[in-house]
Image (cartoon, rainbow, N blue to C red; front, side, top):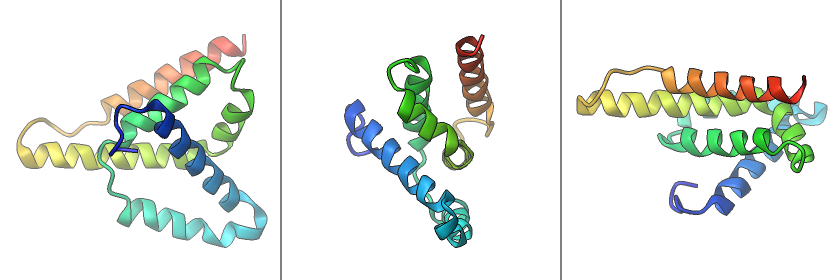
Length: 126
């Protein structure tokens, strides 16, 4: 995702793969892997800029809901973990910035993204 930062195609493929894996874990047969995913996100996930790509693809799905109904439905089912990845990525990015003395850590970006997605989905269901 991060190595090909100019390619929206790879961003979407990675996002869809992540949603697929989260969907598998949501299945009753594989629920015992939930703690593994939680531990991975908390202790091993380290992509500091992934939040930008994940929110961009999710926003695209919401904005184009009429065309991307199936992808959006799958993403909404995986939303809990998608947001955990987004928040963790942003927290890591803030830690990186604070170590460099560049800025104060905040989750304003994530909150703004959630609010923007919420506003977009509200418009779809009215």
